[in-house]
Length: 380
Image 1: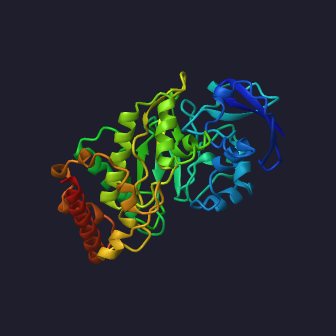
Image 2: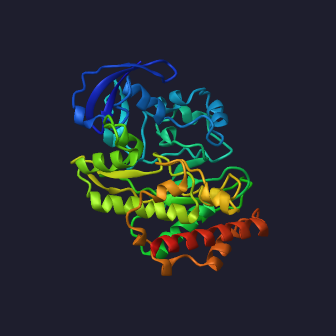
Image 3: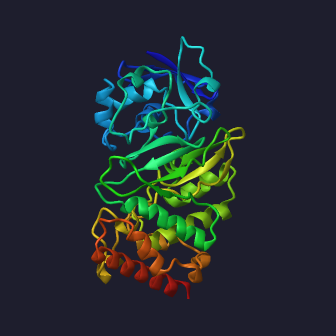
């Protein structure tokens, strides 16, 4: 099956797929190379890798169960049926015999119905003319795109029967708001019918038809890394070369490192950091609003308690341990100690989870207080 890889209405190249949505070949004669997907360019067959990594993981929530109900058995098939559309960028696959235009398919303007957090799925929706952004929704946590009051919103659930991850997102929102920081994603709690946890959460999309998201992973892998350059420095250098203010960008990154440390967010991987890009000029604008802080307080892992445990917290980020990340920070005073979230407010938020024991709440408060103390010592 042959499709054109499109960016909005620009034809970029010709791609060939198997019947189950696997990309098997593509023309390397790119019509507009500057418009091709960023990232992955350090790898052979980079476009195949980009396509494969774009798809929703089969292990996300009940995706496998949902696909079987629709008669689909591979997430690549699901993605190709939905033309590879996303709510974070403008790339899509156009059948070569189609007269579809961007205005016909883009999900910023056209409605969609495909709530994959639901326990009931319409088998006929696999053959409908309504495309879904969920086929390219990455990550293992169960989630879905939806439309609420005209806004594109991302609804997120939790792993297991606790609401901790969703509540962590709200805690992070309050931390940023209290700090007076202007570049974060605001999360709010909501009930999700049929789920064992009390709350999920949702946030409005920060992308639109004029501004897209480019992940840190894509930026870092868009150019070969020079010897001696770290991924952190590569991200700043390549972003600066694409128009971002490097001083502001580093400040945003350092603020994110510090608040992740404060909240013991252990999962700031390279798809949980991004940059906003202007759709027309392709210039980078600013770091994307901070998002995905659900793994705060080492949620899903044993909460660090002893000094030895707190000194050796492993993270998924630029470095392997928290303390190494702090070494990247040049200005510790980006955070305002007098604007830290209070213990009482933190405890009140954590206790919204009916599965949270008093012991677990006490552990998290103790960890938070220890982190505040250590940050204050570094600020002196």
